[in-house]
Length: 132
Image 1: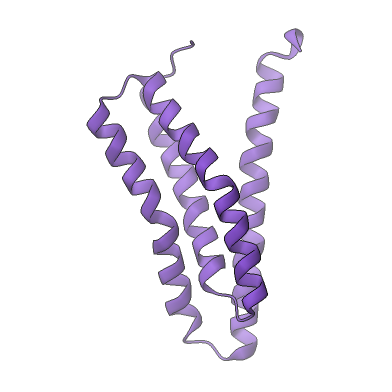
Image 2: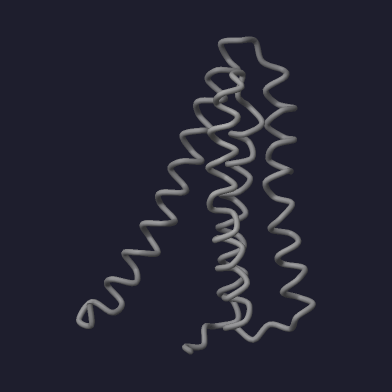
C-alpha cells in the first residue's frame, strides 16, 4: 500500500466538503418535489463512496483514529448544512429567482461531481499510464 502525505486527507476533506455543501444547496433549493428526489438519490448514491475514500486516505496517511473520526463527522454534516443554507436562502427569493438559484446550484453540484470523478480517473491514468 502506497503511503500518502499526511496533508492528503485534509485536501480531500476540503474538496469533498465544498462539493457536499454545493450538493446540499442544490437539494435545499428546488421548488419541484421530483427535483428533490432526483438530487437526493444522486447524493445518497455516491456519499458512501466519498466517505470510504476519505476513510482510506486517513488510514493511508497514518492519522490517528480519533482525528479520522472527527474528519468523517465533519464530512457527514456538510450536506445537511448545505440543505439548511439552500432552504433558508431560497425562501427569500421570488419564484423566478428561486428557480434560477435552484438551477445554478444543481448545475454546480453536477459539475463538481463530474470534475472530481474525472480528475481522479485522469490522474490515475496519467500516473500509471504505461501499466494500463
